[in-house]
Amino acid sequence: MRPDGVRLRTLTLVTGRPTLTQRRRDATRLEIARTAAALFAEHGAEATTAEEIAAAAGISLRTFYRYFSVKEDAVAPLLAAGGQRWVDLLAESSTDLPLRQSLERSAVESLTPADEEAVEAMHWTRSLLRDPRLDGTWQRVHAGSEERLRSVLAARCPDGADPLEIRLAAAAATAAIRVALEQWADSDAPVAGPGSPQDLGARCMRELTAGLRLWERVDEG
Image (spheres, rainbow, N blue to C red):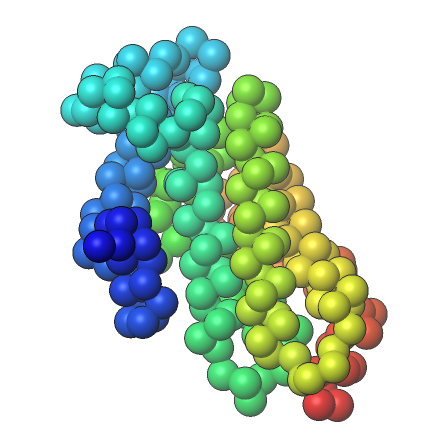
């Protein structure tokens, strides 16, 4: 009999979507992340313990460490949610649009809060990005986002596209979002309008991805 982990992975590959167990696990991770973000925003990461996060989330410390190896990484799912939404939006976007235009549009949409919960998440993100103890977590989140984006870009490119050009495009686009969010976090700008994440994101995306040869290759293909 195959181990449960192998069976769940097989089901995911067959159905193309996460299993119920995986969705529940992801939901738990995100709930812990929201709890940790609220505590970090109020007290700072250094002054907050893993025990306090676990207690506030209503789980045991052992369960906490089953999901996260260090307390700083507890906010990773929250920080990664926007990047995941961006990549998903790009993957689902119409191929009738030029790839660079789809990339910018998807990024701007992902940086635009859709409801009050998303607005709250943006405020938490600002607090988290101002905390130097979370720099390592932030960098790891963006490395993962860049890797996912690279796969989506590769799928949109014609056969024979240069892997280096795909990688450069993914790196430039991910850096654009990172710089935009960091610039916004260092300011007092609102979550919408001038100086907001979507405003800065569009500007950074245009400037950092302009002139990449990949766009010409895709349009020609």
